[in-house]
Image 1 (cartoon, rainbow, N blue to C red):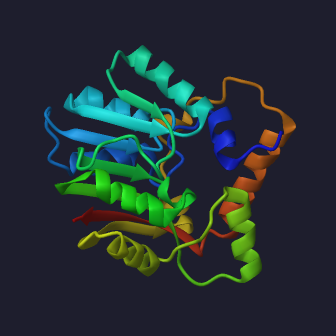
Image 2 (cartoon, rainbow, N blue to C red; image 1 turned 90 degrees about the horizontal axis):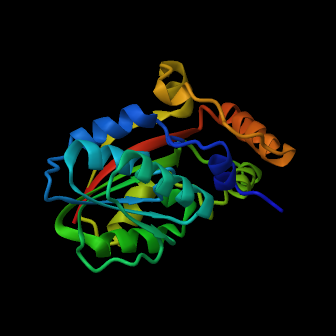
Length: 240
């Protein structure tokens, strides 16, 4: 069996793989005027930690979608343990089972870049209400890379393309979004230098992994350090 990057995250039960981790997620959520009547979408929900935080703290209507079956199973288990009612779908964010204009807010955390970006952004635009807000925390490249470097990164992470900040803005505009603001942005090096260990670091993996998965984690760590100055992230606040 050949494991993907997301299989590795599922095996390690990593719930906050995106830059900024739980801290940034909670800051972003608190910046939104979410009420108990709000409908919120958590695309690529992983273990479901963001969905749980939304449900427990805002008592809003939360829908989550996750393609990786192992991650979806972890999310379902976590929802049950926290006694929260969340509408969980196993599926692809490029073609979501939701009606047009279903959500007040979409919080996409390091998922869009791993998909067919054009199609996924069109789906976000479709299911977001006309007065809704899309928040995206997505990988960026800070400068153009050599073709061999691009291939190394896209092959390992299963991406089709790597995007600069301006590339993201262009894709969002083409998908029909009118306003794009940058809330936060750093290189991976800056993120590592400013990193403060948090609660998400306290629980080691609870299972023994095979060598292929362990090797994949090692490669991920090596790539992160090697490209720390040229890879980064941006948090986009987007409206129609």
